[in-house]
Image 1 (cartoon, rainbow, N blue to C red):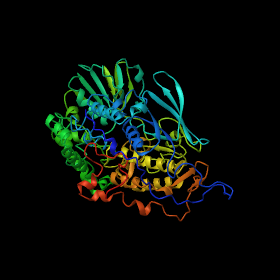
Image 2 (image 1 turned 30 degrees about the vertical axis):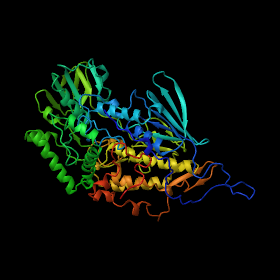
Image 3 (image 1 turned 60 degrees about the vertical axis):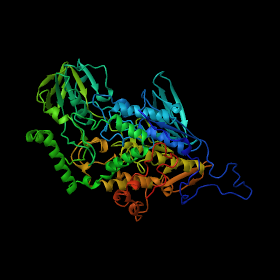
Image 4 (image 1 turned 180 degrees about the vertical axis):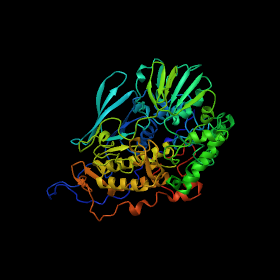
Length: 625
């Protein structure tokens, strides 16, 4: 693998502007007298001060944030904690047969770390993990990285304006405290396995394992295997093991669409070529030796991936969504060799997009084959030698594979106590004090100073890859930290009113979304069925999110200076005047960007440069429209 690092001479140390100062409302500070010293701070204007950050999670979000913060914020030190023994997040944890990304490799990479040597159009998980390990090495993250360290809890310490975290060294068992000015949460959303709740699973005498806890030494040859679940992992693992097992009992609890690629113009994966395309040695040599040619390839691929976004297809009952359903069913029927009975058995009664669409080369072909029994009866219990369904049938197997997905990942994984003494990991859950993840712009939280999350609730915009979304978040976080650092603010947090009104925008935007149809989905609050709050989505396209976060709205924040003065709206103000319009009404538009409407290749891929030419200091900060 070749990860191309950036020329350090390009990383300008010049101080760039964060925009105008906030409108100050209700400054609460002591009145100075003529005898007091004013303006005698020995430090130069905007010189800032040393800052420490703790980043939790060394997946894509944590790595992107570590790299960009270290280049965008002066006098910054950070510690990056991860409980795993290697970096990569979901790509370190999921190693089951057939795991790969369904976004093109040359898109599913950090824009500032282009890799010319991807093996396939759609990469295997192990290659993605190696890529991010290379980024950690090439961009100097390793000295600040603490692997096999699990953050157990976090608490805001008002007296010192710091976050205190309890950390466990999983290698030694030692538990210790660490403190920092800023806490950045990047634990990912798919890392807490969901285990089914049917009876007696512990009594099964064969092997039981979850796809995210795969044992590479497991021998499946000529075994009878149960695969429970037909989400992404179930659809990937089944066709990749079917040739070597004796038989598969495939248990599914709900129907699902099996889609082709997400975007028109992208290559299709197939049974024979699950990676879509194996890049030739000549193609990889051209990418490596001809930076201009590789940049042109990346730009066109990015434009195809992002440019085909049509969020109108996500509206329940819309003509676009109806046509999407017809297209998906037609594709499925072709792959089922025209078998309409099988299609009827597999076709969901909810709209496409209610849950994540999953391209799954080989899956449909495998389940109609002679080795697979497709079972949609509910499992009621395990026996010593197999599984029993509601109809009374017991099917004996040697191995049970749980392709059952993950627990809701939109809440902090560990207790996170904010300035009001509330635990975000509790109050955000259904039935809690708030009842949903209450965010500001999908990056910050009210009543929670100096706290950020990279890509959690309300962070996923239409049409964006995870690495690019993480870069957008990390750049925004850097701007807010720089503001606090340069203007000598001890704390910064969004007002309660701003967070509440952003939540109103989210609710209004997704009011008629397909997510509200009758499927069970991790997109929804609590993973429920039917109409429920969309907790994953940002209310707009990726380019809209880029533009909104490129210019922080300082008027939405509360600041506290190092000497205790408070600037901005009262953080305890819970309600706005009854006649006050939502602050975002005239600003938000319809969730699209002007960039979504242009065919100017350079404008829509402004962030892609030839290898070694990206200026990380200014990446995603100054938009070219």
